[in-house]
Length: 543
Image 1 (cartoon, rainbow, N blue to C red):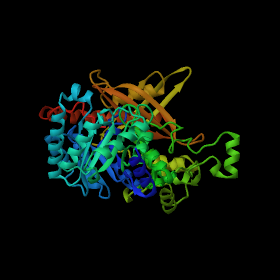
Image 2: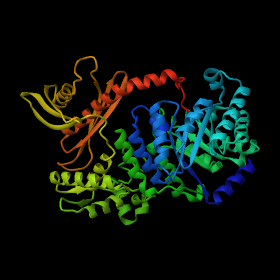
Image 3: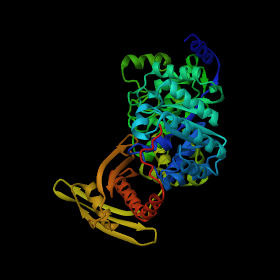
Image 4: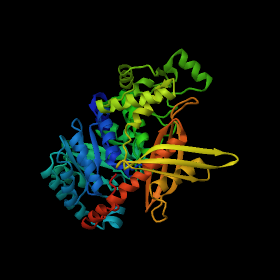
């Protein structure tokens, strides 16, 4: 289309604003292994806000009491960024979202309804006319409550363009100021997806009254490419996640979108509000909270993103870095293993380096960080940037129950049975000491902790589903992070621990799980009561 080409050329010639809509806390958290509690969500939301995103989708309030409380707390605490809550085109959902957003400075209700033929026939069992009516009524209802309403046509990439345009036109007419065109199942390819955006712009008579958004999944590895193609075609909001996490193969990666439009301004002609120097710090915060690492070759934030091993590459970079680097490592907050601090360093020097690494922490956390730093400095005479980052990320960890590790003793050898003794401290002041033998010191540690916490009776025992330990820094005195996943009553609970001793780190990680079991037992009755009073939210993914 010549008209579309002219529009695209015009878009590229102007410095338009590209809105970054982060859905790490909603779509990202839905993925297996990425579950976060309310405090972890708040901590991550604060970091995402500092990163400079325009909209944070904080959750799906109608899905559970936990989601509702998380959205409400984030709405009350985050003032600089719009906070969105997801809702089906269902009035109770919309009301629940508005209730959760009541304290938000800049609230947004995000409603969705599937539009593709396969969803209409098999999931919704609705005709086209019913889809149009439900869309208009739901958007209008949300608009009466909230001045900022977004509508998503779920599975838009597989919807007939004529019908998709009708639905979008109805949504805008009813009050939607943003219309989202998702590639829900990651089926589209860039040329096809750009043409769909062009068709929507050409067919929808009131399209200039709304911002076109896209939300692409990565099932075929093209989420970022499809999103960028949509930007070239006129979309001005991209929905994405930190590290590209999300349902199935994940979402469009926020850091890749941000750096693509920054590195190639002559192609996309848009700017974002993202502070790129905080990208690596935010990525590492997410991996610390979830325990799920990004692959070393991940674009922008992977450990190898700015590494050069081949001799010809190293020679080129030493002569002129742009021979093999199109971005500067410091532009994304990437830091190497630099020796920065020692046991005699003061608080002022510590906080200066914290700021240089892209972290922003409050006075309470700064005081605790200094204590933890001094403790680590007694064990490690040389503190690297990575050590400091590990301490910073460990501040995100809050004790989620009554137990903590007081002391432990471990005995193991090739000719002896591994034996571990632990003494756990309870918040009521009491202690409990137990010992166990096992198939290795880690197994013995887990068994001793279960006994001390009173969870070894067989009826409520947690079984270890996955265990991993990795070095966070270099050298013989490196800090190690242990991550455990345990199955308990149909759920998978994740725990993590940090120490220069990997057995101690493993103990902290398993105590984290034990504390969640305690909390889960006390909260289970309330969750069951809530579910009995609310309609099912199964099958409600909207991306």
